[in-house]
Amino acid sequence: MADSALSAQRRTALTHPAHDEFCFATAYPRVADYWAAAGRLPGTGDDIADATFDLHLLHYMTGGASTNPYWDIVAAAVSPGPWERANRSEVNGGNPKGSARLAYAQILLQAAYAYAIPSPATLRWIADVAQGQSVLEVGAGRGYWAYQLTRMGVPTNAFDSHPPDRAVNTAFPTAAGLPATWHPTATPPVSTADLAAAHADDALFLCWPPGWENPMASTTLTAYQDAGGSLLLYIGEPRGGRTADSAFFDALEAGWTLLDQDPGYISWWNLDDRAQCWQRR
Image (cartoon, rainbow, N blue to C red; front, side, top):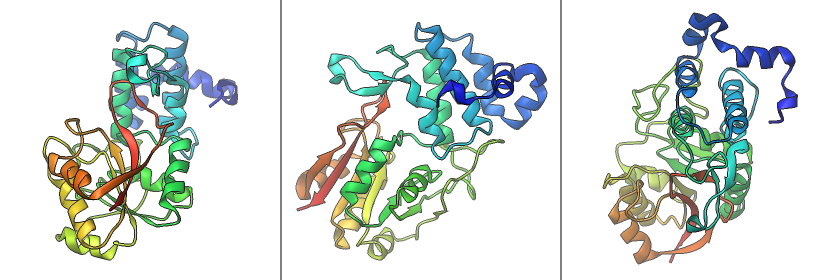
């Protein structure tokens, strides 16, 4: 978003949100909490960049029009990472170490939208590797990725064990001023095998499946494979990271081939996730 796109009236409203502190906190409590704390937290060292980021966050999280607000908020903070991270593009605000202020924003944005960042380039990459197949997303959270993929012309069926619009979801809590879901997200059937059988012709999409040996990723992949599914889209960290379980990575090594990895995938500076496409052998 170019700052020049903001009217003088909108800019004034954004830079003085505490003018009516009670109304602001009532309408957008999580954004108000961030605004109250941000100025007290260490930034990236570039005050202008930090202020620009905050302006974008305030604009898009308080009613600013966008089809992909998550990306429009973080895009200005994308910068090359250090050599030890292969100089990848990442959200670090121009500082390879990020900042405490950016880390707070990360928590806010991941809870509001999704853990992984759906940049336009990665969405196009998924559309290309899906090769016209519909997508089955399991663990869709708010359905933000499903919404973005559907906008790109990739029909996506989204499922989550705790759809935030109908159940308590600790990863995606409800909050005034924020959509509970972005795309219709259904509760999956009790039997993962039944879900996989109904969508065996779709590409399976697992975006930040739960880690710490939670079996969701491996159970879903096994059911999909047993049903005859053959294309996996995985966004998450490698073995030993914060996503998926050991059995999931064992299954990949035993029966799947890595077809492609998005070279332009953009992550947060403090995460090691990547976007991959796997094909069943």
